[in-house]
Length: 144
Image (tube, rainbow, N blue to C red; front, side, top):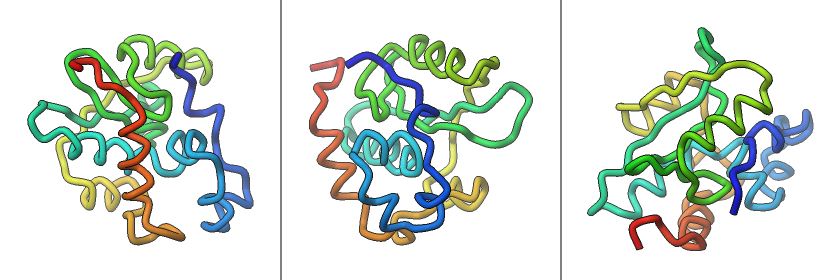
């Protein structure tokens, strides 16, 4: 699957206000915008024998995180599946119309959520972890 910009799936005002409406979006939209961080950590945790890390994108010079994804050996995993990380960066920068910065995330999910005002899995309308695990399982990792 070709990389798609996360911003193309941004939540509408009602999706931001109503967790059930946000939950009912298609998996790709749900994990592109609103639960990308959950998907990244689930991907990392799904392959404990691999050195998968978590990274994020933000507008150059900004503090707000736009998108979170998992990375392994130059490959990125997000709502678009596995793609070369440079392609993921280019697609998102092109969509945003501004240069983006890649930020390595070295904290756990709880600390990340606290620092960046993202929801923890227990703050969603339903538990997103099983949904994320199933989504990760749809894609063959690059080492396979």
